[in-house]
Length: 268
Image (cartoon, rainbow, N blue to C red; front, side, top):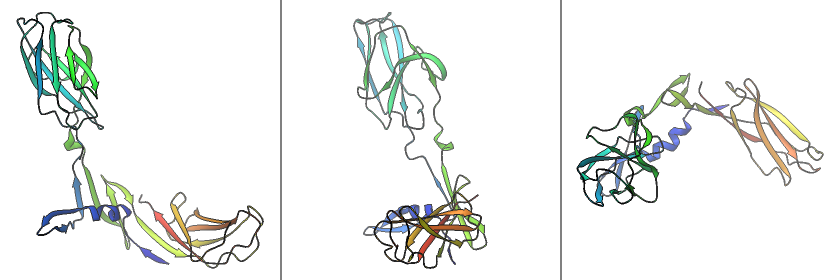
């Protein structure tokens, strides 16, 4: 039995972890036992907004804020974007128009306060929420929507990838302490096939891989063509034991061949 200890995720990540171009497109791979990845798509506050008066001016000052809604949650509110001389009472003919450019959000929320202090927590402060296509909104009412502000702390949403020892001769890769790949273990069956099968019937054999447990993934590959109308598969049937089956879709004799068996053993 041949053991190859490596992390599946490591195989995916390492080719991508090339940094710092040197010279003519030269790149240096990272070699480390632990890597901390910051959140690549943390919601970013918008850079700027334009607030314009609609209708006749008044004597108030209004403060506007824009919250970026990302996949993971909210940004801190951008602003304040200030309107001096706002109408004393907002209506369809007297208010404000707020226009801004998108950052990296899925959608955007526009808030209003009467002080330059950013809104926090629960408030009645929203003019509009879930803006997607039109990033321009009219403030034409004294009424405001209830809203809850809970910005994401991107520093608390990092991924720590670590390579540690698992057992004798085996390593494991974890993300934030949770093992995601442990090892792949390989073996080969004896010859399977060569005997007639009725439609839907199977022949089977077992192989032993130490550490195999029910529920772990198994990949079976024939060394030669088993024949048309044949399907095959493997599974962990009991501790340390993998069953390999070769089945016939119609009455036939599958060609005799050996099967390579690969077990993907998850960490615990």
